[in-house]
Amino acid sequence: MLVKDFMTRNPITIAPETSFSEALKLMKQNKIKRLIVMKNEKIVGIVTEKDLLYASPSKATTLNIWELHYLLSKLKIEEIMTKDVVTVNENTPIEDAARIMEEKDISGLPVVDDAGRLVGIITQTDIFKVFVEIFGTKREGTIRYTMEMPDKPGELLEVAKRIYEAGGNIISIATLFEEGKDSYLATLRVENIDHEKFVKSLDEIDVKLLYYHSN
Image 1 (cartoon, helix red, strand yellow):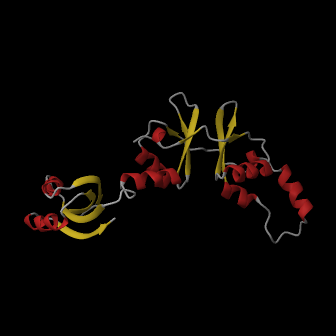
Image 2 (image 1 turned 135 degrees about the vertical axis):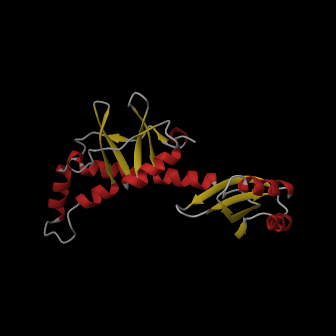
Image 3 (image 1 turned 30 degrees about the vertical axis):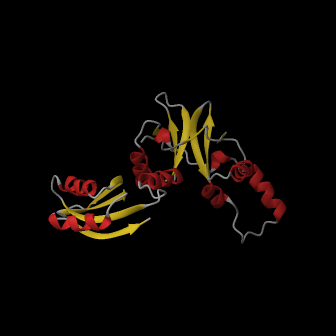
């Protein structure tokens, strides 16, 4: 799964000289939380809803409403935007985009093609939707098993065999490793399985069923 499969195409952009009021209006009208700033078809900045909030005068200000409106109408996006913009290529794996967001502590990434042209934007919301799809949480009639597995070759295959023998079909698999441990957690979502037969078969291998949940 690549970024281009989940990004929003043709994102709304603004110019550096766009006013604070215009940017805020665009966000509200389009129900978005960030705008990419473009100049001569190049990305020069990004501004978020939070940036606009912090740029607004404090409620404790002594300015009257007319003075506030005047100040905000003169404030340009280039004065508050983030200029060092982190981007991602459209062919980047979706999990790498998620890692970049986590490492950089950012909630959205402009997406560019191989020529550096803006083609979309990927956000935390998009990543969350991918997470939901990967785990098959919308699929009814499934059972979610979480097991502690010894960290050695073949154990996951043994579990898969027993799922097959119990008539089950694996919808998703996720693993979680912790450095220094000789075991890891595996979560599998399965459909059409004989639950009792599967659970009983786990006694034959070195796997510990921690919990399960029916959807």
